[in-house]
Amino acid sequence: VKILDSKGEIIAQQAVSINKHQVQIPVKNIHAWSAESPTLYRCIVELGEDTFVTNFGFRTIRFDQNNLYINDQKVFLRGLNRHQCYPYIGYAAVDSLQEEDVRILKEELHVNAVRTSHYPQSQSFIDACDRYGLYVFTEIPGWQHIGDETWKQQAIQNTKDMVLQYRNHPSIILWGVRINESLDDDELYAKTNEVARNLDPTRPTAGVRYLTKSHLLEDIYTFNDFSHHGDNKGALSKGEVMIDTHHPLIISEANGHMFPTKSFDTQARRQEHALRHARVFSDAMADHQHTGVFQWCMFDYATHKDFGSGDRICYHGVMDSFRNPKLAASVYASQQDEEPILEISTSMDIGDYNAGNLPDFYAFTNADEVRLYKNDQFVSEFSRSEYSGLKHGPIRIDDTIGKLLLENENFTSKQADDIRKCLLASKKYGSNLPLRYRLLYAKMMFQYKMKYSDGVALYGKYVSGWGSDSITWRFDAIKNGEVVKSIIKRPSAKLHLSYQVSRTALIEGDCYDMSAIRIQVKDEYHNLASYAQLPLNLITTGPIEIVGPSTVVTEGGMTGTYIKTTGEEGEAILTISTPDCSAITIHFTIAKEV
Image (tube, rainbow, N blue to C red; front, side, top):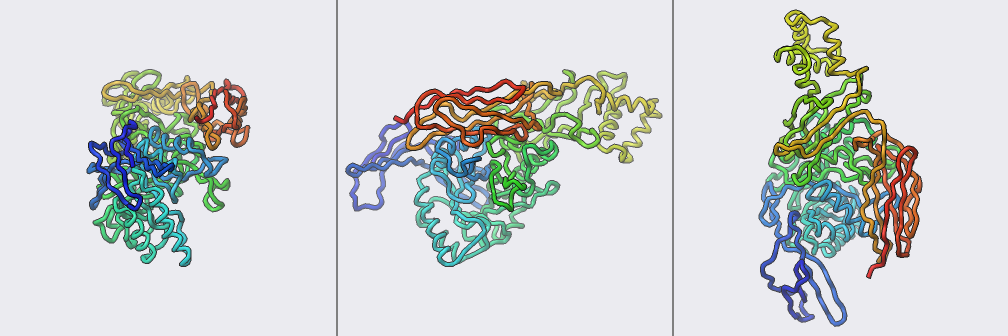
Protein backbone atom coordinates (compact mmCIF):
# COMPACT_ATOMS: atom_id res chain seq x y z
CA VAL A 1 0.00 0.00 0.00
CA LYS A 2 1.41 3.39 -1.03
CA ILE A 3 0.23 6.87 -0.12
CA LEU A 4 1.17 9.69 -2.53
CA ASP A 5 0.82 13.42 -1.99
CA SER A 6 -0.55 15.94 -4.48
CA LYS A 7 2.86 16.12 -6.19
CA GLY A 8 2.90 12.38 -6.79
CA GLU A 9 5.61 11.71 -4.21
CA ILE A 10 5.35 8.68 -1.94
CA ILE A 11 4.90 9.86 1.66
CA ALA A 12 4.05 6.50 3.22
CA GLN A 13 4.03 2.85 2.26
CA GLN A 14 3.52 -0.41 4.02
CA ALA A 15 3.28 -4.09 3.21
CA VAL A 16 0.18 -5.67 4.69
CA SER A 17 -1.21 -9.16 5.05
CA ILE A 18 -3.92 -10.10 2.60
CA ASN A 19 -5.83 -11.52 5.57
CA LYS A 20 -6.38 -8.04 7.01
CA HIS A 21 -9.54 -6.13 6.20
CA GLN A 22 -8.31 -2.87 7.69
CA VAL A 23 -4.87 -1.38 8.03
CA GLN A 24 -3.61 1.87 9.56
CA ILE A 25 -0.72 3.68 7.89
CA PRO A 26 0.81 6.68 9.72
CA VAL A 27 1.11 9.81 7.55
CA LYS A 28 2.79 12.99 8.76
CA ASN A 29 2.46 16.67 7.83
CA ILE A 30 -0.83 16.30 6.01
CA HIS A 31 -2.72 19.18 4.41
CA ALA A 32 -6.45 19.12 5.11
CA TRP A 33 -8.97 19.10 2.27
CA SER A 34 -11.58 21.87 2.12
CA ALA A 35 -13.53 23.72 -0.55
CA GLU A 36 -11.02 26.56 -0.25
CA SER A 37 -7.98 24.26 -0.36
CA PRO A 38 -8.90 20.95 -2.04
CA THR A 39 -5.70 19.03 -1.36
CA LEU A 40 -5.90 15.44 -2.59
CA TYR A 41 -3.82 12.38 -1.84
CA ARG A 42 -3.65 9.08 -3.68
CA CYS A 43 -3.74 5.55 -2.36
CA ILE A 44 -2.28 2.76 -4.50
CA VAL A 45 -2.91 -0.85 -3.51
CA GLU A 46 -0.92 -3.52 -5.36
CA LEU A 47 -1.64 -7.23 -5.14
CA GLY A 48 0.34 -9.37 -7.55
CA GLU A 49 -0.37 -7.97 -11.01
CA ASP A 50 -3.49 -6.11 -9.87
CA THR A 51 -3.45 -2.44 -8.92
CA PHE A 52 -6.19 -0.35 -7.35
CA VAL A 53 -5.91 3.45 -7.24
CA THR A 54 -8.16 5.91 -5.44
CA ASN A 55 -7.90 9.57 -4.53
CA PHE A 56 -8.88 10.80 -1.09
CA GLY A 57 -8.43 13.70 1.27
CA PHE A 58 -7.98 14.40 4.96
CA ARG A 59 -10.68 16.49 6.62
CA THR A 60 -12.92 16.45 9.66
CA ILE A 61 -16.65 17.13 9.92
CA ARG A 62 -18.55 18.03 13.06
CA PHE A 63 -21.69 19.96 13.87
CA ASP A 64 -23.43 21.59 16.79
CA GLN A 65 -26.93 22.95 17.23
CA ASN A 66 -26.73 25.51 14.42
CA ASN A 67 -23.41 25.08 12.67
CA LEU A 68 -21.34 22.77 10.51
CA TYR A 69 -17.57 22.70 10.91
CA ILE A 70 -15.06 21.48 8.34
CA ASN A 71 -11.60 21.09 9.86
CA ASP A 72 -12.96 23.03 12.86
CA GLN A 73 -13.82 26.01 10.63
CA LYS A 74 -17.47 27.06 10.55
CA VAL A 75 -18.96 26.68 7.08
CA PHE A 76 -22.30 27.92 5.76
CA LEU A 77 -23.34 25.82 2.78
CA ARG A 78 -24.27 28.05 -0.17
CA GLY A 79 -25.42 25.63 -2.80
CA LEU A 80 -27.71 24.61 -5.60
CA ASN A 81 -29.46 21.39 -6.51
CA ARG A 82 -28.34 19.66 -9.68
CA HIS A 83 -29.79 17.03 -11.97
CA GLN A 84 -27.14 15.39 -14.15
CA CYS A 85 -29.08 15.92 -17.38
CA TYR A 86 -28.23 17.67 -20.63
CA PRO A 87 -30.19 18.66 -23.74
CA TYR A 88 -30.32 15.95 -26.42
CA ILE A 89 -28.31 13.36 -24.43
CA GLY A 90 -30.13 13.09 -21.12
CA TYR A 91 -27.84 11.60 -18.47
CA ALA A 92 -25.36 10.14 -20.98
CA ALA A 93 -22.69 12.82 -20.51
CA VAL A 94 -18.99 12.13 -20.89
CA ASP A 95 -16.57 12.92 -18.08
CA SER A 96 -15.52 16.27 -19.50
CA LEU A 97 -19.11 17.58 -19.48
CA GLN A 98 -19.56 16.41 -15.90
CA GLU A 99 -16.41 18.29 -14.95
CA GLU A 100 -17.61 21.41 -16.77
CA ASP A 101 -20.68 21.56 -14.54
CA VAL A 102 -18.42 21.54 -11.49
CA ARG A 103 -16.29 24.30 -12.97
CA ILE A 104 -19.41 26.40 -13.63
CA LEU A 105 -20.63 25.89 -10.08
CA LYS A 106 -17.26 26.79 -8.61
CA GLU A 107 -15.89 29.46 -10.95
CA GLU A 108 -19.00 31.11 -12.43
CA LEU A 109 -21.71 30.69 -9.81
CA HIS A 110 -19.18 30.73 -6.95
CA VAL A 111 -21.19 28.40 -4.71
CA ASN A 112 -19.40 26.20 -2.22
CA ALA A 113 -21.81 23.26 -2.25
CA VAL A 114 -24.04 21.14 -4.47
CA ARG A 115 -26.79 18.61 -3.78
CA THR A 116 -27.00 15.66 -6.17
CA SER A 117 -30.78 15.63 -6.26
CA HIS A 118 -32.15 13.02 -5.89
CA TYR A 119 -29.64 10.24 -6.49
CA PRO A 120 -25.90 9.54 -6.47
CA GLN A 121 -24.42 11.08 -9.59
CA SER A 122 -21.54 10.29 -11.92
CA GLN A 123 -18.25 9.40 -10.25
CA SER A 124 -16.57 11.81 -12.65
CA PHE A 125 -18.76 14.64 -11.33
CA ILE A 126 -17.82 13.83 -7.73
CA ASP A 127 -14.15 13.43 -8.75
CA ALA A 128 -14.29 16.96 -10.12
CA CYS A 129 -15.92 18.21 -6.90
CA ASP A 130 -12.92 16.71 -5.08
CA ARG A 131 -10.48 18.53 -7.36
CA TYR A 132 -12.20 21.91 -7.61
CA GLY A 133 -13.41 22.03 -4.03
CA LEU A 134 -17.19 21.72 -3.66
CA TYR A 135 -19.03 20.29 -0.67
CA VAL A 136 -21.47 17.58 -1.77
CA PHE A 137 -24.74 16.38 -0.28
CA THR A 138 -25.54 13.08 -1.99
CA GLU A 139 -28.42 10.72 -1.35
CA ILE A 140 -30.06 7.44 -2.19
CA PRO A 141 -32.24 7.45 -5.33
CA GLY A 142 -35.96 8.05 -5.09
CA TRP A 143 -38.71 10.64 -5.07
CA GLN A 144 -41.65 10.62 -2.62
CA HIS A 145 -42.68 6.98 -3.14
CA ILE A 146 -42.07 4.20 -0.59
CA GLY A 147 -42.95 0.72 -1.81
CA ASP A 148 -43.43 -2.73 -0.32
CA GLU A 149 -40.99 -4.73 1.79
CA THR A 150 -38.93 -5.84 -1.23
CA TRP A 151 -38.72 -2.22 -2.33
CA LYS A 152 -37.57 -1.17 1.15
CA GLN A 153 -34.84 -3.79 1.20
CA GLN A 154 -33.59 -2.37 -2.08
CA ALA A 155 -33.50 1.13 -0.53
CA ILE A 156 -31.40 -0.25 2.32
CA GLN A 157 -29.10 -1.93 -0.21
CA ASN A 158 -28.89 1.34 -2.15
CA THR A 159 -27.71 3.05 1.03
CA LYS A 160 -24.98 0.46 1.46
CA ASP A 161 -23.91 0.71 -2.18
CA MET A 162 -23.84 4.50 -2.07
CA VAL A 163 -21.59 4.67 0.98
CA LEU A 164 -19.24 1.95 -0.25
CA GLN A 165 -18.92 3.45 -3.72
CA TYR A 166 -18.51 7.10 -2.72
CA ARG A 167 -16.98 7.25 0.76
CA ASN A 168 -13.43 7.94 -0.46
CA HIS A 169 -14.56 11.30 -1.87
CA PRO A 170 -13.61 14.08 0.57
CA SER A 171 -16.08 16.43 -1.11
CA ILE A 172 -19.03 14.40 0.17
CA ILE A 173 -19.97 15.72 3.59
CA LEU A 174 -23.58 14.51 3.97
CA TRP A 175 -25.23 11.15 3.35
CA GLY A 176 -28.89 11.46 2.39
CA VAL A 177 -30.56 8.31 3.74
CA ARG A 178 -34.25 9.12 3.20
CA ILE A 179 -36.21 8.91 -0.01
CA ASN A 180 -36.55 12.52 -1.11
CA GLU A 181 -39.85 14.07 0.07
CA SER A 182 -41.22 10.78 1.39
CA LEU A 183 -43.39 10.43 4.47
CA ASP A 184 -41.93 9.26 7.76
CA ASP A 185 -41.13 5.54 8.00
CA ASP A 186 -39.21 5.10 11.23
CA GLU A 187 -38.51 1.40 10.74
CA LEU A 188 -37.05 1.90 7.27
CA TYR A 189 -35.07 5.01 8.06
CA ALA A 190 -33.67 3.61 11.29
CA LYS A 191 -32.11 0.89 9.12
CA THR A 192 -30.75 3.25 6.43
CA ASN A 193 -29.21 5.46 9.12
CA GLU A 194 -27.67 2.42 10.79
CA VAL A 195 -26.17 1.19 7.52
CA ALA A 196 -24.62 4.56 6.71
CA ARG A 197 -23.23 5.10 10.20
CA ASN A 198 -21.75 1.62 10.44
CA LEU A 199 -20.02 1.89 7.07
CA ASP A 200 -18.91 5.50 7.58
CA PRO A 201 -19.02 6.99 11.09
CA THR A 202 -17.15 10.12 9.91
CA ARG A 203 -20.04 11.80 8.08
CA PRO A 204 -23.41 13.02 9.37
CA THR A 205 -26.63 11.65 7.92
CA ALA A 206 -29.52 13.69 6.59
CA GLY A 207 -32.78 13.10 4.78
CA VAL A 208 -34.76 15.49 2.63
CA ARG A 209 -38.38 16.07 3.58
CA TYR A 210 -41.07 18.62 2.88
CA LEU A 211 -42.69 17.86 6.25
CA THR A 212 -42.50 20.11 9.26
CA LYS A 213 -42.22 18.40 12.67
CA SER A 214 -41.04 15.22 10.95
CA HIS A 215 -39.42 12.43 12.96
CA LEU A 216 -35.68 13.10 12.97
CA LEU A 217 -33.58 9.93 12.94
CA GLU A 218 -30.72 11.60 11.08
CA ASP A 219 -28.06 13.96 12.41
CA ILE A 220 -29.23 16.99 10.42
CA TYR A 221 -32.77 18.07 9.52
CA THR A 222 -32.86 18.83 5.79
CA PHE A 223 -36.06 20.54 4.75
CA ASN A 224 -37.57 21.71 1.47
CA ASP A 225 -38.71 25.18 2.49
CA PHE A 226 -41.11 26.54 -0.13
CA SER A 227 -42.67 29.06 2.24
CA HIS A 228 -41.35 32.18 0.50
CA HIS A 229 -43.74 33.73 -2.02
CA GLY A 230 -42.19 37.12 -2.67
CA ASP A 231 -43.51 39.41 0.04
CA ASN A 232 -42.88 37.39 3.20
CA LYS A 233 -39.78 36.19 5.03
CA GLY A 234 -37.43 33.95 3.10
CA ALA A 235 -37.26 30.98 5.46
CA LEU A 236 -39.17 29.38 8.30
CA SER A 237 -37.55 29.38 11.72
CA LYS A 238 -36.34 26.25 13.45
CA GLY A 239 -39.28 26.33 15.81
CA GLU A 240 -41.68 26.33 12.87
CA VAL A 241 -39.96 23.38 11.21
CA MET A 242 -38.52 21.06 13.85
CA ILE A 243 -39.64 19.31 17.01
CA ASP A 244 -36.13 19.12 18.46
CA THR A 245 -34.27 22.32 17.60
CA HIS A 246 -30.98 21.08 19.06
CA HIS A 247 -30.03 19.63 15.67
CA PRO A 248 -28.81 21.63 12.65
CA LEU A 249 -31.29 22.72 9.98
CA ILE A 250 -30.46 22.91 6.27
CA ILE A 251 -32.79 24.14 3.54
CA SER A 252 -32.48 21.43 0.90
CA GLU A 253 -34.75 23.12 -1.68
CA ALA A 254 -36.36 26.54 -2.09
CA ASN A 255 -37.99 28.54 -4.89
CA GLY A 256 -37.97 26.31 -7.99
CA HIS A 257 -41.56 25.43 -8.86
CA MET A 258 -42.82 28.28 -6.68
CA PHE A 259 -41.69 30.80 -9.30
CA PRO A 260 -40.60 29.14 -12.57
CA THR A 261 -38.86 31.67 -14.76
CA LYS A 262 -37.79 31.42 -18.37
CA SER A 263 -34.82 33.24 -19.84
CA PHE A 264 -37.28 34.94 -22.21
CA ASP A 265 -39.76 36.05 -19.56
CA THR A 266 -40.28 39.75 -18.91
CA GLN A 267 -37.60 41.75 -17.16
CA ALA A 268 -39.91 42.20 -14.17
CA ARG A 269 -40.33 38.45 -13.71
CA ARG A 270 -36.62 37.75 -14.15
CA GLN A 271 -35.87 40.39 -11.53
CA GLU A 272 -38.40 38.93 -9.10
CA HIS A 273 -36.92 35.47 -9.67
CA ALA A 274 -33.48 36.74 -8.70
CA LEU A 275 -34.79 38.64 -5.67
CA ARG A 276 -36.56 35.55 -4.36
CA HIS A 277 -33.31 33.62 -4.47
CA ALA A 278 -31.60 36.50 -2.70
CA ARG A 279 -34.30 36.72 -0.01
CA VAL A 280 -34.16 33.03 0.91
CA PHE A 281 -30.37 33.09 1.14
CA SER A 282 -30.27 36.35 3.04
CA ASP A 283 -32.85 35.43 5.65
CA ALA A 284 -31.47 31.93 6.20
CA MET A 285 -27.98 33.32 6.75
CA ALA A 286 -29.16 36.20 8.93
CA ASP A 287 -31.22 34.18 11.41
CA HIS A 288 -28.21 32.07 12.54
CA GLN A 289 -30.52 29.05 12.76
CA HIS A 290 -29.67 27.53 9.39
CA THR A 291 -26.51 25.61 8.54
CA GLY A 292 -26.90 25.98 4.80
CA VAL A 293 -29.18 26.46 1.80
CA PHE A 294 -29.42 24.44 -1.42
CA GLN A 295 -31.88 26.29 -3.66
CA TRP A 296 -33.68 24.74 -6.61
CA CYS A 297 -31.86 24.61 -8.94
CA MET A 298 -28.71 25.00 -11.06
CA PHE A 299 -30.36 24.85 -14.51
CA ASP A 300 -33.60 24.14 -16.38
CA TYR A 301 -34.17 20.50 -17.20
CA ALA A 302 -36.38 18.11 -19.14
CA THR A 303 -39.21 16.61 -17.12
CA HIS A 304 -42.42 14.62 -17.32
CA LYS A 305 -45.82 15.87 -18.42
CA ASP A 306 -46.87 17.29 -15.05
CA PHE A 307 -43.98 19.63 -14.34
CA GLY A 308 -43.19 21.37 -17.60
CA SER A 309 -44.65 24.43 -19.29
CA GLY A 310 -46.38 22.40 -21.97
CA ASP A 311 -42.97 21.62 -23.44
CA ARG A 312 -41.83 19.22 -20.70
CA ILE A 313 -39.14 21.62 -19.55
CA CYS A 314 -38.88 22.70 -15.92
CA TYR A 315 -37.86 26.36 -15.96
CA HIS A 316 -36.64 26.23 -12.37
CA GLY A 317 -32.96 26.96 -12.89
CA VAL A 318 -30.78 29.98 -12.33
CA MET A 319 -29.38 28.95 -15.72
CA ASP A 320 -31.05 27.61 -18.84
CA SER A 321 -30.62 24.00 -19.95
CA PHE A 322 -27.38 24.85 -21.77
CA ARG A 323 -25.95 26.51 -18.62
CA ASN A 324 -26.42 30.08 -19.86
CA PRO A 325 -27.00 32.31 -16.82
CA LYS A 326 -30.31 33.95 -16.02
CA LEU A 327 -30.33 37.06 -13.86
CA ALA A 328 -30.72 34.93 -10.71
CA ALA A 329 -27.28 33.43 -11.35
CA SER A 330 -25.77 36.78 -10.42
CA VAL A 331 -27.13 36.43 -6.87
CA TYR A 332 -24.71 33.55 -6.41
CA ALA A 333 -21.87 34.88 -8.54
CA SER A 334 -21.71 38.10 -6.53
CA GLN A 335 -21.03 36.41 -3.18
CA GLN A 336 -17.26 36.55 -3.60
CA ASP A 337 -14.53 39.17 -3.97
CA GLU A 338 -12.10 37.62 -6.46
CA GLU A 339 -13.92 38.61 -9.68
CA PRO A 340 -15.93 41.82 -10.15
CA ILE A 341 -19.61 41.17 -10.81
CA LEU A 342 -22.18 43.68 -12.04
CA GLU A 343 -25.56 42.86 -13.54
CA ILE A 344 -28.42 45.34 -13.96
CA SER A 345 -31.94 43.91 -13.87
CA THR A 346 -33.35 46.13 -16.62
CA SER A 347 -32.48 47.17 -20.15
CA MET A 348 -33.83 50.68 -19.32
CA ASP A 349 -36.33 50.27 -22.17
CA ILE A 350 -39.59 51.75 -20.89
CA GLY A 351 -41.64 49.84 -23.45
CA ASP A 352 -41.23 46.70 -21.36
CA TYR A 353 -43.20 48.20 -18.47
CA ASN A 354 -46.83 49.15 -17.93
CA ALA A 355 -47.63 52.74 -18.91
CA GLY A 356 -44.01 53.18 -19.96
CA ASN A 357 -42.96 53.72 -16.34
CA LEU A 358 -39.59 52.28 -15.40
CA PRO A 359 -39.95 50.85 -11.87
CA ASP A 360 -37.26 50.45 -9.25
CA PHE A 361 -34.62 48.00 -10.38
CA TYR A 362 -31.55 46.33 -8.94
CA ALA A 363 -27.83 46.03 -9.35
CA PHE A 364 -26.49 42.57 -8.54
CA THR A 365 -22.88 43.21 -7.66
CA ASN A 366 -20.05 42.57 -5.24
CA ALA A 367 -18.92 46.19 -5.49
CA ASP A 368 -19.10 48.65 -2.60
CA GLU A 369 -21.43 50.95 -4.52
CA VAL A 370 -22.88 51.61 -7.96
CA ARG A 371 -22.76 55.03 -9.60
CA LEU A 372 -25.34 55.96 -12.22
CA TYR A 373 -24.69 58.35 -15.10
CA LYS A 374 -27.13 59.69 -17.70
CA ASN A 375 -25.45 60.82 -20.91
CA ASP A 376 -22.18 60.93 -18.93
CA GLN A 377 -23.71 63.23 -16.30
CA PHE A 378 -23.61 61.92 -12.74
CA VAL A 379 -27.03 61.07 -11.34
CA SER A 380 -26.54 59.35 -8.00
CA GLU A 381 -24.75 56.57 -6.17
CA PHE A 382 -26.33 53.53 -4.52
CA SER A 383 -24.93 51.17 -1.92
CA ARG A 384 -27.61 50.12 0.54
CA SER A 385 -29.07 46.63 0.31
CA GLU A 386 -32.06 45.36 2.24
CA TYR A 387 -30.63 41.83 1.96
CA SER A 388 -28.47 42.13 5.05
CA GLY A 389 -27.73 38.43 5.42
CA LEU A 390 -25.79 38.35 2.18
CA LYS A 391 -22.18 39.36 1.88
CA HIS A 392 -23.16 41.35 -1.21
CA GLY A 393 -26.91 41.86 -1.45
CA PRO A 394 -28.79 43.28 -4.45
CA ILE A 395 -28.75 47.08 -4.46
CA ARG A 396 -32.02 48.85 -5.19
CA ILE A 397 -31.82 51.70 -7.72
CA ASP A 398 -34.85 53.88 -7.13
CA ASP A 399 -33.76 57.29 -8.42
CA THR A 400 -32.90 58.06 -12.05
CA ILE A 401 -33.07 61.84 -11.49
CA GLY A 402 -30.65 62.33 -8.62
CA LYS A 403 -28.63 65.53 -8.97
CA LEU A 404 -29.72 66.33 -12.52
CA LEU A 405 -32.36 68.90 -11.55
CA LEU A 406 -29.91 70.77 -9.34
CA GLU A 407 -27.22 70.73 -12.02
CA ASN A 408 -29.36 71.48 -15.07
CA GLU A 409 -32.23 73.66 -13.84
CA ASN A 410 -32.44 76.95 -11.98
CA PHE A 411 -33.58 75.42 -8.68
CA THR A 412 -32.29 75.63 -5.15
CA SER A 413 -31.21 72.40 -3.46
CA LYS A 414 -34.50 72.20 -1.54
CA GLN A 415 -36.60 72.91 -4.62
CA ALA A 416 -34.71 70.33 -6.68
CA ASP A 417 -35.19 67.72 -3.97
CA ASP A 418 -38.94 68.37 -3.66
CA ILE A 419 -39.45 68.29 -7.42
CA ARG A 420 -37.38 65.10 -7.71
CA LYS A 421 -39.57 63.40 -5.10
CA CYS A 422 -42.73 64.44 -6.90
CA LEU A 423 -41.54 63.30 -10.31
CA LEU A 424 -40.44 59.91 -8.97
CA ALA A 425 -43.75 59.53 -7.13
CA SER A 426 -45.67 60.33 -10.31
CA LYS A 427 -43.72 57.62 -12.09
CA LYS A 428 -44.47 55.11 -9.35
CA TYR A 429 -48.12 55.90 -8.55
CA GLY A 430 -49.42 57.57 -11.72
CA SER A 431 -52.74 59.30 -11.04
CA ASN A 432 -53.07 57.55 -7.66
CA LEU A 433 -50.65 59.84 -5.85
CA PRO A 434 -50.63 59.54 -2.05
CA LEU A 435 -51.77 62.66 -0.20
CA ARG A 436 -48.25 63.67 0.87
CA TYR A 437 -47.18 64.02 -2.75
CA ARG A 438 -50.33 65.91 -3.72
CA LEU A 439 -49.51 68.37 -0.95
CA LEU A 440 -45.93 68.58 -2.18
CA TYR A 441 -47.18 69.34 -5.70
CA ALA A 442 -49.37 72.10 -4.26
CA LYS A 443 -46.32 73.52 -2.51
CA MET A 444 -44.43 73.54 -5.82
CA MET A 445 -47.23 75.44 -7.55
CA PHE A 446 -47.86 78.05 -4.86
CA GLN A 447 -44.47 78.46 -3.21
CA TYR A 448 -42.20 77.77 -6.19
CA LYS A 449 -44.59 79.45 -8.67
CA MET A 450 -44.56 76.43 -10.98
CA LYS A 451 -47.27 75.83 -13.55
CA TYR A 452 -48.80 72.46 -14.42
CA SER A 453 -47.10 72.63 -17.82
CA ASP A 454 -43.75 73.07 -16.07
CA GLY A 455 -44.27 69.80 -14.23
CA VAL A 456 -45.28 68.02 -17.43
CA ALA A 457 -42.18 69.30 -19.21
CA LEU A 458 -39.90 68.21 -16.37
CA TYR A 459 -41.56 64.79 -16.29
CA GLY A 460 -40.96 64.33 -20.00
CA LYS A 461 -37.36 65.49 -19.70
CA TYR A 462 -36.30 63.56 -16.60
CA VAL A 463 -38.67 60.60 -16.35
CA SER A 464 -40.42 59.43 -19.51
CA GLY A 465 -37.90 60.61 -22.08
CA TRP A 466 -40.50 60.28 -24.84
CA GLY A 467 -39.40 62.09 -27.97
CA SER A 468 -35.95 62.90 -26.64
CA ASP A 469 -32.64 61.88 -28.13
CA SER A 470 -31.46 58.38 -27.26
CA ILE A 471 -30.30 58.20 -23.68
CA THR A 472 -27.08 56.50 -22.64
CA TRP A 473 -27.12 55.11 -19.12
CA ARG A 474 -23.86 54.04 -17.51
CA PHE A 475 -23.49 52.02 -14.34
CA ASP A 476 -20.07 51.98 -12.67
CA ALA A 477 -19.27 49.39 -10.01
CA ILE A 478 -16.95 50.95 -7.43
CA LYS A 479 -14.67 48.79 -5.29
CA ASN A 480 -12.18 50.37 -2.90
CA GLY A 481 -12.72 53.70 -4.62
CA GLU A 482 -12.00 52.41 -8.13
CA VAL A 483 -14.21 51.50 -11.07
CA VAL A 484 -13.94 47.73 -11.45
CA LYS A 485 -16.73 47.17 -13.99
CA SER A 486 -19.09 49.26 -16.10
CA ILE A 487 -22.30 48.55 -17.97
CA ILE A 488 -23.82 50.77 -20.66
CA LYS A 489 -27.53 50.61 -21.47
CA ARG A 490 -28.62 52.31 -24.68
CA PRO A 491 -31.02 51.53 -27.55
CA SER A 492 -29.31 48.93 -29.68
CA ALA A 493 -28.68 49.19 -33.40
CA LYS A 494 -26.53 46.12 -34.01
CA LEU A 495 -26.37 42.57 -32.68
CA HIS A 496 -23.56 40.05 -32.65
CA LEU A 497 -23.00 36.45 -31.61
CA SER A 498 -20.97 35.56 -28.55
CA TYR A 499 -19.96 32.12 -27.29
CA GLN A 500 -18.26 30.16 -24.55
CA VAL A 501 -16.76 26.76 -25.24
CA SER A 502 -15.96 24.23 -22.53
CA ARG A 503 -12.93 22.69 -24.29
CA THR A 504 -11.27 22.93 -27.68
CA ALA A 505 -8.68 20.17 -27.11
CA LEU A 506 -10.61 16.90 -27.16
CA ILE A 507 -9.19 13.54 -26.14
CA GLU A 508 -10.69 10.23 -27.24
CA GLY A 509 -10.19 7.39 -24.78
CA ASP A 510 -12.54 4.49 -24.12
CA CYS A 511 -15.35 6.80 -25.21
CA TYR A 512 -15.83 9.74 -27.55
CA ASP A 513 -15.16 13.18 -26.09
CA MET A 514 -17.54 16.14 -26.16
CA SER A 515 -17.52 19.90 -25.85
CA ALA A 516 -20.33 22.22 -24.75
CA ILE A 517 -20.84 25.50 -26.60
CA ARG A 518 -22.97 28.22 -25.01
CA ILE A 519 -24.21 30.84 -27.48
CA GLN A 520 -25.58 34.30 -26.74
CA VAL A 521 -26.86 37.21 -28.82
CA LYS A 522 -25.56 40.56 -27.58
CA ASP A 523 -25.81 44.19 -28.57
CA GLU A 524 -22.90 46.50 -29.34
CA TYR A 525 -22.58 47.32 -25.62
CA HIS A 526 -22.25 43.61 -24.74
CA ASN A 527 -25.69 43.40 -23.16
CA LEU A 528 -27.69 40.23 -23.68
CA ALA A 529 -30.44 40.70 -26.29
CA SER A 530 -32.93 38.85 -24.13
CA TYR A 531 -35.80 38.98 -26.62
CA ALA A 532 -33.75 37.89 -29.64
CA GLN A 533 -35.11 34.72 -31.22
CA LEU A 534 -32.65 34.15 -34.03
CA PRO A 535 -32.23 30.98 -36.11
CA LEU A 536 -28.67 29.67 -35.96
CA ASN A 537 -27.08 27.32 -38.46
CA LEU A 538 -24.42 24.95 -37.12
CA ILE A 539 -21.93 23.42 -39.56
CA THR A 540 -18.95 21.19 -38.77
CA THR A 541 -15.87 20.25 -40.75
CA GLY A 542 -13.32 17.67 -39.69
CA PRO A 543 -13.65 14.73 -37.26
CA ILE A 544 -16.49 16.09 -35.11
CA GLU A 545 -20.25 16.00 -35.36
CA ILE A 546 -23.09 17.99 -33.83
CA VAL A 547 -25.11 16.39 -31.06
CA GLY A 548 -28.68 17.53 -31.59
CA PRO A 549 -30.16 19.59 -34.42
CA SER A 550 -28.00 21.55 -36.84
CA THR A 551 -30.43 24.48 -36.76
CA VAL A 552 -31.38 25.97 -33.41
CA VAL A 553 -33.21 29.09 -32.24
CA THR A 554 -32.13 31.36 -29.43
CA GLU A 555 -34.49 31.73 -26.47
CA GLY A 556 -33.96 34.71 -24.22
CA GLY A 557 -31.09 35.58 -26.54
CA MET A 558 -29.35 32.32 -25.63
CA THR A 559 -28.98 28.72 -26.72
CA GLY A 560 -26.29 26.09 -27.00
CA THR A 561 -25.09 22.96 -28.70
CA TYR A 562 -22.68 20.06 -28.24
CA ILE A 563 -20.13 18.49 -30.51
CA LYS A 564 -18.49 15.09 -30.15
CA THR A 565 -15.53 13.31 -31.66
CA THR A 566 -15.98 10.63 -34.32
CA GLY A 567 -13.08 8.26 -33.70
CA GLU A 568 -10.49 10.10 -35.78
CA GLU A 569 -7.70 12.51 -34.89
CA GLY A 570 -7.16 15.89 -36.50
CA GLU A 571 -8.37 19.48 -36.68
CA ALA A 572 -12.04 20.42 -36.77
CA ILE A 573 -14.17 23.55 -37.02
CA LEU A 574 -17.66 24.46 -35.84
CA THR A 575 -19.23 27.41 -37.66
CA ILE A 576 -22.21 29.23 -36.14
CA SER A 577 -24.09 31.68 -38.35
CA THR A 578 -27.28 33.69 -38.55
CA PRO A 579 -28.42 36.41 -40.97
CA ASP A 580 -27.16 39.94 -40.24
CA CYS A 581 -24.51 38.82 -37.75
CA SER A 582 -20.90 37.86 -38.36
CA ALA A 583 -20.38 34.10 -38.23
CA ILE A 584 -18.41 32.45 -35.44
CA THR A 585 -15.78 29.80 -36.11
CA ILE A 586 -14.48 27.62 -33.28
CA HIS A 587 -11.41 25.47 -33.86
CA PHE A 588 -10.92 22.09 -32.19
CA THR A 589 -8.02 19.66 -31.94
CA ILE A 590 -8.80 15.96 -31.53
CA ALA A 591 -6.23 13.45 -30.29
CA LYS A 592 -6.19 9.89 -29.00
CA GLU A 593 -5.56 9.19 -25.34
CA VAL A 594 -2.02 7.98 -24.77
